[in-house]
Length: 278
Ligand code: G4P
Image 1 (cartoon, rainbow, N blue to C red):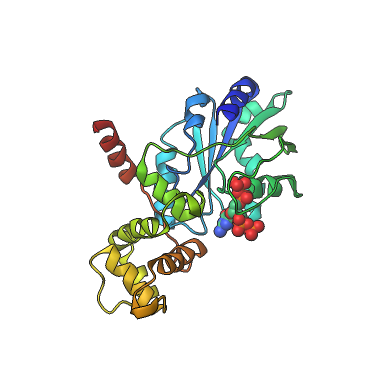
Image 2: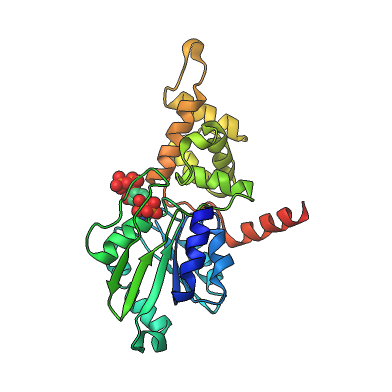
């Protein structure tokens, strides 16, 4: 992080536009705090990627919320819909028409914490594989420069950017979506955190997927029931909650529970108030 901070600071004066890739399911938690710190007044395009997995109504709320900043344009994208990603130079041109007309190329830097899909997006824009796509966060990549249409040069971020850590809810959400390695947090804790949220926001999805007769009243009960229904039993009929958590998190990440978002602008406002008050 320290190295990335130094490198970004060094290169930022030559950058005209920042493109930040975020996970549409957790736009706040997958945002890198360095971006707002370094951005000053530079225009920024926020790409809410993996929108195929996110709740479309909540994604729209985030787009509206992020665009309250006049220097920000927010777009919802999905790596499988390459055409939307390939239209990025057009979006930049309409966002900054004067700048793209200038003789000097517009320099954009693409940023994003690991696993938001930054490499996938770079490869689509480049039309070839130049960045390694992988499920292990923190894969080190070479610095890249790509020439795009409309007189735009895109460069990758030097170094790895880490997500926010001051909000403990963000840690759980990042772990649930796979941005933080599974070994970094207790698996069952992450599953329980997410089930508690799903019980309040998407109870119908849980009921449909796990065929609860009556909706469980606690997250612990809900996880136990998943274990029982999926045969995750140890000797003596005790539920293996690790295996049950694994089933839940896999269902969540693969989209088997439907399109879900784990934070809304309203939730974040109250969480930030709590952090400030503590
Ligand atoms: P990064 O550079 O930001 O670290 O992310 P990267 O492109 O490596 O993507 C991380 C994972 O997210 C990859 O899956 C990639 O296929 C997946 N991904 C990227 N964009 C989207 C999207 O819009 N929707 C969905 N559903 N998934 C997306 P992986 O399983 O780690 O690798 P692979 O098996 O697909 O190669």
